[in-house]
Image 1 (cartoon, rainbow, N blue to C red):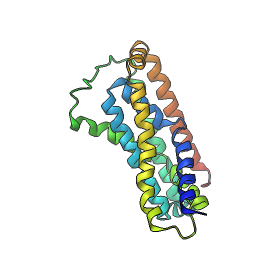
Image 2: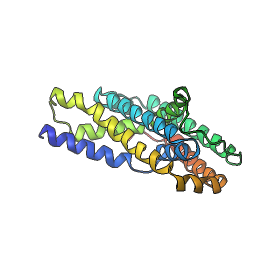
Image 3: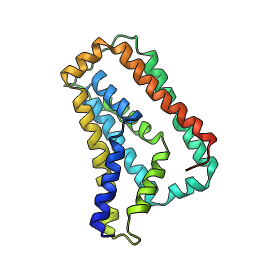
Image 4: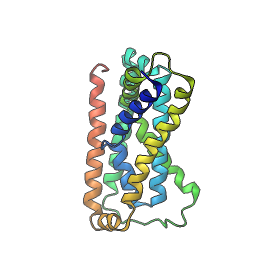
Length: 212
């Protein structure tokens, strides 16, 4: 396959996966609307870094190791599921708490470390993503990819992952979405927590199944 066409195919497949709703979308949207636009963008940055980590694992062939070593893959899924459930419990417990809005114009850079870490850990909480990346690379990468293609993939993947979630953060931090959230914080948080918790439980339940 032509390397340029291979690159376009890989990025198209990954973009389609990135826009699919999941725990990452829930976390970015809620952070942007409940905290600040900058916090949402920091979370999006963490998502992008997590995508690059998975891409590097796939390019190094470590996703094949996860598929062969069942206990390691199951352990990673269990840990990821527990993390998502932990986040879900935190969101649920805080659903009834009054919201202290952050000043979006004066948020200190140090205050962005926590949303960045949440974004990174949420992205890394599902090791299945590494398998998906590995499958896409196996299907679309040329047998002997040129160096420029391997060099450009990580930055291109970062732009897709971080770029999409940055769009989500900007959209949900606008005035109307934020006002709607403030009016219905209790129910929105409960729905978000339920969705994230269900994904975490499903991931843990998958530990009883063999890797795909």
